[in-house]
Length: 314
Image 1 (cartoon, helix red, strand yellow):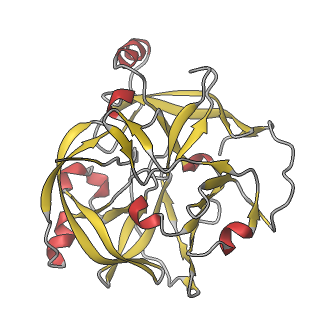
Image 2: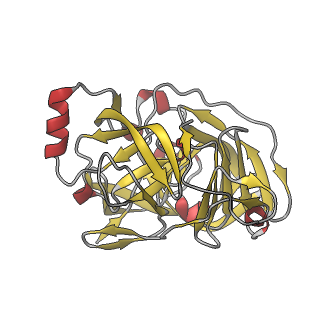
């Protein structure tokens, strides 16, 4: 049986993972320190009550993944082998269930996890214990605050109600050739220089730049003739970088960076692109109400300010 699993771009250069102080927590809400490493938000996570361990908060992955070495250390069976579809093609994964996963004292029980093999990580990621995906994050409204280096999780609607800004609806499903994919955050993105129509992009905190999925690999070959690759994905795929105006909702971000990567095409993905959360100072994701607010402002909900302003990229 084939399962559809989509993991983020996870593009990094050098990584140093640090341990942080205890979280600020209430019964339903927690605020934990978050270290940004090349745009990747890293927090501490407990697994079956053990830890904490360093995980990337990855809204672009619809499943949580844990290093096989850590699973063995905790005597967690790697589980059954599955054939899964990723953005770079078919691969084999082993899936099991964690009794509990926690962040800052807030816990979700019985979470499916995939084993993450060491060869799937670059040498700079060997201290990374796992990837915290949407099958955990969807249980909360979350605030990814890149400026203050903080992650806030809330089981209630109080977090969302304490911020205002343009509410951008998102779909919980990607669109793949074999059917919809669950546990996604898909929003509309405009890149006029690339395509007149809006793009359906998966919101991805695990990529430090936006990645476009062209219709065919011919686009990659054409770009390769004009300039050499500048970046690489976690899986080693070469990427060519461009800059352009991007529109998210009613706001436009000038000179925003995006990449086109080899072997990463629309046919192999469930969206048109990955939209990196690193572009923004902060982003509020309300899983309870299926909307996001880019660069939310603190305060009760109010009438929206004028939009269609041009913003500078972070």
